Image (cartoon, rainbow, N blue to C red):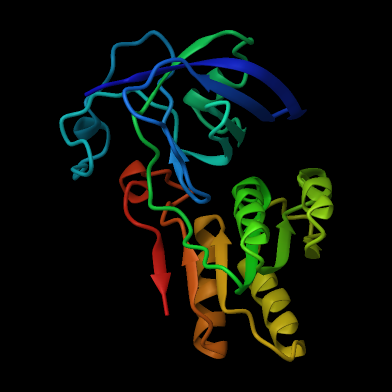
Length: 260
């Protein structure tokens, strides 16, 4: 398997456990392209690679022969084709991301040769409702950029598990998209699925024209709320099929889940 090398060209701590890192690809046998909603795998540390099938029983696609001691799959924030750079926003939650967040600029990293997942399918002149929670919100910014470039009407519902997790609000504001911000003040410190379902239900019940599709990037416990909203309002939805709780990479390698 071909492994690509990338350097950390810039890094910025957004909070004590969240960082924005720009990677510049140093070599590639083919252009490294990515779509909103795809993931990147980054190798970490100096330990020998562990066979993926040993780490995750049942791992087969797309590189069943691969050995890659990788961080959890990280959603791609935005990809710049002109400069061959990748921006990622991630939270340090495991050994890999805790290692990655402290790496200095100019560190050379090894990355999977292609992004995982098929990404969001965005058609011109449509209306999209983008829904995300906490650290899953940054990939929606790339989706909003593409949708605006295709003359789409964009509404975002950004859910935060507490007021200290706020991020990306200025970015979305500059795109001049309709923004609905929901902050959980229950004190639990983690997302409550029924709250985001309530926000979605109230919004969709009050609009005259329903969106053509929902693009969701949510933690696994939140996804049933999207299914319930689909059943009630019959709005197609797409979401990256990655379990953000277990971070099983095989699910991230599958296609974007689409329900009509």
